[in-house]
Image 1: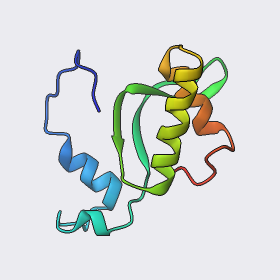
Image 2 (image 1 turned 120 degrees about the horizontal axis):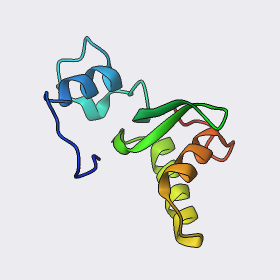
Image 3 (image 1 turned 180 degrees about the vertical axis):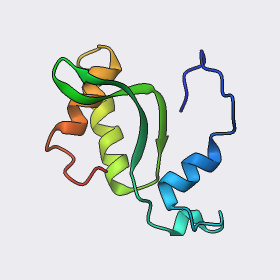
Image 4 (image 1 turned 60 degrees about the vertical axis):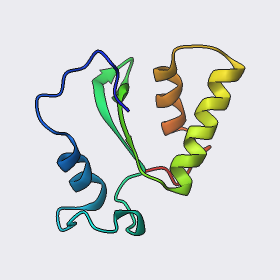
Amino acid sequence: YSDVDTVWLKDPFKYIQTELFGSKNNGDNQTKQHPNYDILAAIDDHDYNNVADYYCTGYLAIAQTPASFAFLSQWEKGLQSNPQLNQPLFNSLLRSKEIPDIR
């Protein structure tokens, strides 16, 4: 996912592939491999209100894992039950114990 008001200067998919699946991945059968992370997100601020590495929801790469599905489900439920900006809730959920396996 990427906000519509961004400009890509280089193809991001090689970076995403390497970060999610490692540098030895050749791009084949990536859905059968276990990713290194469930979600990749850009860091918005390294110290936002005393929160280290506050993530930006304007750029997300999400692997198909049980933890990422659980995270997205909780995020959606939280946003539907209490309409708000999505980024604070995203960061709060990442640091909560609701999805203990999220990476």
